[in-house]
Image (cartoon, rainbow, N blue to C red; front, top):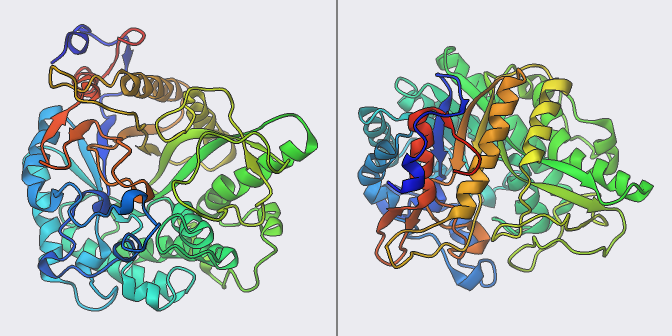
Length: 474
């Protein structure tokens, strides 16, 4: 342990005793083993092999080989003191065709992973979908097809039937905004389609998939703790002009309110539907009741703030897609994203912990009360292994510290925040960015697969052990 990690003997900011301290990953980013034990192809397996889709033509056929190294990875989680581990299930590993019988080799891997976690005292939190749709379902229409929602419910029931006796905490669809609008509007993510009108139907069907899966899971075990997961941003207008104010309304509407209002109020915001041209036949009878069935938890992924302008071609933000893409902002393609003058991560994302508090306060003020969990929060930096063999990622320590202080302030203000998961446990395949962006608490040498906890991992381990934070930036 480092000197800074052991300096604080007792925390100044104490978190509740039952606060969940965890870290998160996703299947496609870490597992590798894309052809082992009967796994089928996902849309990402197809996408990464298409020229120009991923930086340097990189792919996740091996990734960080978690499929074969999971026991060592779980031991490392326990050594860091993680109370919980949020991971996703690979749909094509469980159902290679996206429907039909469960693949025994695939579900057995997750059963062994769950057992290993429990044996080490780490609580498994399962995410059923983190963007890896089976390719046969994409060939049949993908998320713009309503039938995909039904297939997801069948898959969710099968996984829950196999693991629900040992896994208490479940979430359905991770960040439906990304799957819908990066996958089907901008084309930055798999399947790489640029069909803005169809992306809106994809968004609705992802939410419907959540509702149908929740219904199926609760029919099996009503006691299951079930959550929805959204990625939320604080959104600010660049100036007080009418055009910039309208831009902020539009981006907030499509990024935040479209999903929150559906999940927590059972409706889509009227102004957002207007922005989208009121797509015909989007919602069928009974859809919104399914989507808005009461949640046990709302999982929130938070990374940054958006500053936007209604003037096209304004001063560009540092954040940009890594490859040639269209706009994900259906109906608001004219909006430009501008820098707010804040420090940025290696992704070009502005660092703004105050935005997290803004998001949490808004949820408490504008929506029905529901227990909240920060299910992803973290940052990529240009990490380098030093001469001493340690990654001194002070920027990441500061990032995590600042956001955890916001979490503590929210709890003190009476906001029902129950846990925090750092993204990510380990460096991994960062989607269209390939392996060039490192979010991990643990450094991975992609040639040797050697794992080395960074300074941030040791800092986080100390924070967990003490149950809170010490003085400023220790």
